[in-house]
Length: 84
Image (cartoon, rainbow, N blue to C red; front, side):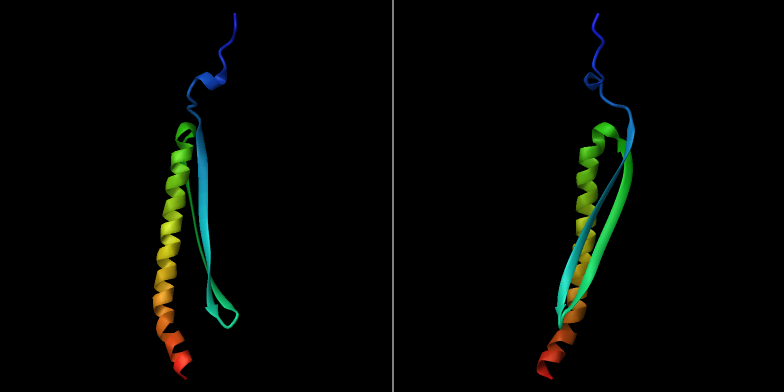
């Protein structure tokens, strides 16, 4: 009698998924600002791929939001430097 393969049964094992996103913003004069977000979550093994994508999108959204905010704050300062 042949034993069933473990792959035939959905895994009930819990796994930890971690994702991150980073962005480097060039602000001129050989200076840059670094932005980084990281998240992790625990889920069932069969949900790991979906959870990974959700975590990645969350990190990306948070980093890009912070980049836009920094760009808004830097815009007046960069304009002042150009006119001086």
